[in-house]
Image (tube, rainbow, N blue to C red):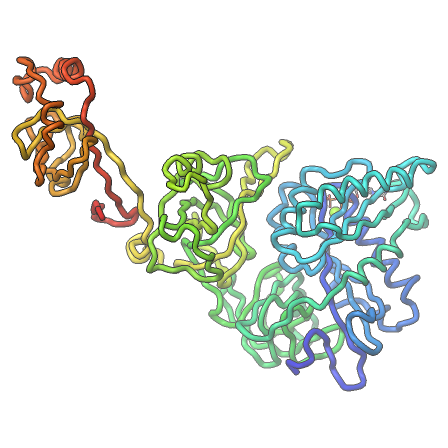
Length: 586
Ligand SMILES: Nc1nc2c(ncn2[C@@H]2O[C@H](COP(=O)(O)OP(=O)(O)OP(=O)(O)O)[C@@H](O)[C@H]2O)c(=O)[nH]1
Ligand SMILES: [Mg+2]
């Protein structure tokens, strides 16, 4: 059966049938629901009356789900058959963006609905961003063309089409089809008898854009449920889209949100019993003894194939339209697969030696070391400017891959390698700004609640620490006294044995504290250079008193005495998750 790929073929004589999920996305009030309605009525009455099956209702006509059917277009395979376009009408309101992100992940083809009198609006832009992350193909629909004065209509449509083409120029949807319609001419008050404009033409565009979505029966079964209801004498039917793997009659499936497992009693596709369904199929799965009220939307899967995690390592990219900086320790709304929770982030980049390495997809190398970042490095970010200064090549290059550690406020249940989107949903929804901040792939989930102790120490992210102080005076040819490197209260003992470098070139080793004010003794194993000694040994009566008395005064006097102070620099790295806070030098 697996060979039947995208097409449900219950018997050798049955027609080929293909389902394609079409998302309807756009700004609030752009007319998405009106369009979905116009498409499904046009689709099932006027245009496709000839095919008797097209009259049959789809397995789901849930709130946001409706469908239209058409003869299978020739580019989707030989012979007669049927194409079902399942319309997934997403909400437009800004507060429902999580639902939109969830919806976008089951979509094969996205329609971006634009009010032709308004053009791109804030949520149209957000939908475009989500589409670029989650969808392969797009059609732009300019709606409400009836509101354009008839004489100038064509010119106005052309102008908006050009504008949209320009907007899409730098996106993966460059050159995508743009159709103009009026889904509900006259608006809400118009009688139901008024026919929509341009909808038949739009259906042709959708047919031409329909493609065979990725179909892979391997791996664990995962399905997004959009509707759940009971049928008397049968059981409970859950309908939805198979996101990965396959399912057969008699298989056990788990409802992870409820932690229950049920056996698949029967299945239907296109209103026809089937024994098997795979990735991309829309199917109704019937189980017994399950109260449909317990599940409205959600996931079902192969038992124990999902992980419930408290933290994760992801590989990520900043969303270019997000205006703010991405700062370590900041909180974001994080959508992991199909769930959204609050979480805190910590960004890190490759260690300098691995800076231009090929990015690793779907894997994270725990053997490698990584550099902690205060913020995600992007063009113009503060730390990337600093990088530029320290960068020997002087080019200020950005790394090819960056990662984040996410720590969730509540555990989330998700598949491996799922999509992750970070957003700032608390941003004022009236502010004209993109709330989506980053997107990425989950590489490693942490299922242990005590991951801070059990897991994080394996993550070798380090901070480079640089401390600077000054040489106060020479003790003898092989030792000097330093100051201003530590605070008075610092326990200098833990720094003993660390290597330092003087600005005059000598290498030294911290030997221990000296006096009470944070001063310390440095041994210079190869001895001070004669020049340095001359430089530092400025005859001064005050200086001989050093180590006693008022420090402030001392500082002043040494400034007066040595024209050019000799600085001491201490460089070490410290692993962020090392509980012992060891200081490491190369
Ligand atoms: N004049 C005119 N009005 C339209 C057209 N399509 C939709 N409308 C009106 O626009 C308003 C919004 O339409 P909906 O279909 O509810 O918009 P929506 O995008 O689904 O809205 P949300 O789901 O809330 O984001 C309604 O009052 C519709 O009657 C059209 O082609 N022309
Ligand atoms: Mg709507």
